[in-house]
Image (cartoon, rainbow, N blue to C red; front, top):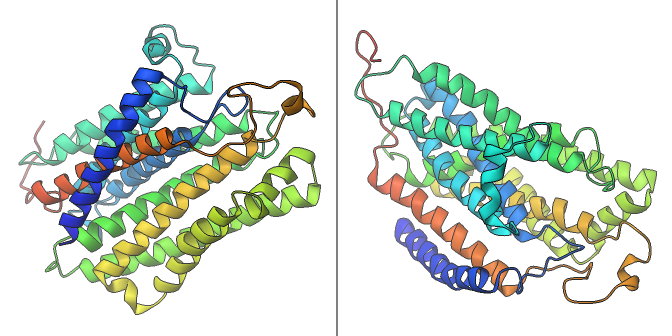
Length: 380
């Protein structure tokens, strides 16, 4: 029943997304609400969200395929599949945000590796190849001696890419709310949180019910998610308290927009209430060992993390870098007020729907929770 509901939701999102993609490709950015002042919108936040799940999922896959922890043995394939599904979704979101998508070849043939953007593009390309190769090697009848070295490289790259997104924001000196030293260090923690939430969904909703380790897996992942949410909450407190204490014009205004402005409802209800407090309550009780409840809490955490990405991007860009800039020029896409347009939401629904369908198909059709019995020797 649960799989059917996810299939229906996924196909419904995909159907809506088809209209959004038609609008995007026929009319370009005309019907988007970002513009010359607010240059990044919903799709950038969506890219950060899905890329975070992909790198976090790979980190969780190493528990099985690299470190060989008995408790998580057999779960590595599922984590890799989650990475394989979510990373293209994130890249699709950021690709649609580009003004000239056909110029992407320049970053490969004419790269400037001193730029964080070029490092991320090359890094995610290599990372995607590593995910595909790792998943393919994990399906081989006999264990490959190449799997662990590749997983080591992938783990290092996953941590680097996680911090790279924070660095991409942090190097913007004119955005005080981004230009903080600990921002790049926070994102690996956020992405690991995404990975743990993904595995709660995978094991709780799609894992083998008769696996004797299932209850303990949910227990450990639930407690791990509690710890990560507390760490995430501490980071949030340091960011908010420092900005308000310093009372810098841009940083404090951005925080006030998140706390009490037009984005306040999403912050308090979705990011804090549904995405943090509810999982903290549920996952510290015996209910965390229930598969459906654990998976539902994973969904809540992912929703909170998605809102958190938006609350990092939107407020910082809706404040003018120069006083009076918003009143000096008027015209289409010359506004500091941003809320995603219907077309942006439609495309987002399509990307989320496609990722949901891909994830469920893998969980439903592929042997992602089983591994071949190891034999003597290794295969090349």
